[in-house]
Image 1 (cartoon, rainbow, N blue to C red):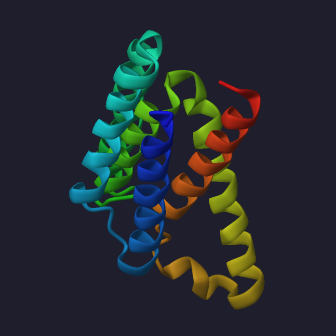
Image 2 (cartoon, rainbow, N blue to C red):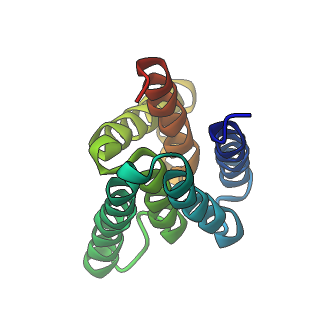
Length: 155
């Protein structure tokens, strides 16, 4: 049996769990994001050791990028604009998809979120802007899109 399959199943299960958990509760618990991050690094250690450095940089850059956004917004506005679970989730996705796919992943997630905001505005008007919008489902969806594309391309 190919060693890749169990890792991909774990990735899919944890990402789907994070998608639904954040959509329902507005939280991305460490008990799900941390195993996703570590399994991504372990995946590269076991299945593609040459890509381990890129995966590690993906985790670092993913975490760092969203941490800067999180803290910058919090300092300027004195409230959260992005949950810290999103910071850790992007680090985990960076570990899985490597740093090279982070710009595409974040762009897709932001595009999906913007689409949801537009749909909310069309359906409910400005009232829809009063509720926080969990970003985890959009990160998870972008991760699946990028992952699917990578699988098809054989990367």
